[in-house]
Length: 152
Image (cartoon, rainbow, N blue to C red; front, side, top):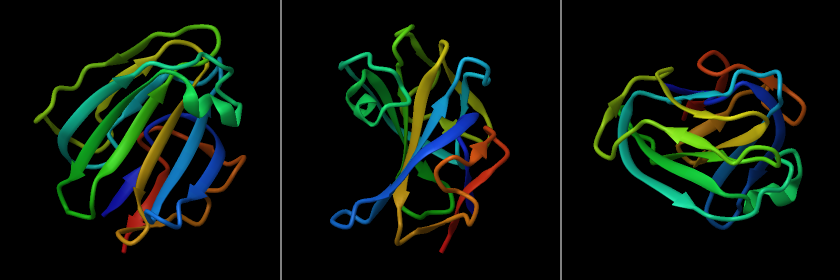
């Protein structure tokens, strides 16, 4: 079992929270990237939450405080919860998320869209998933294609 990139773009951060054990991979989606988001694994949607915030340029670390829609998935094969955050950028503040709580999803299924340049994050437990070797800052990733992490 593995998690795929939920977005096209450039990895701008890979951070492990030593306290929680979760890893967060941040992907900057520039103006020329496809702006769709896909489900990182087969599973079920547990929750969808919109959080209001800033609208800073999405390539900045401070953009973690931007408005976002957070979707929590439960992978079919187990491995803890996987979180995908669709975050607005500076120019446009529109996030589309077509999922519903309780919905089953397939890995690679398109579920959303962020208009123009923005940011997408995927967060998962490091005790359940191991980062893929090529995922580090400045790596280019493709939604539904590139593997972010593999199940331990």
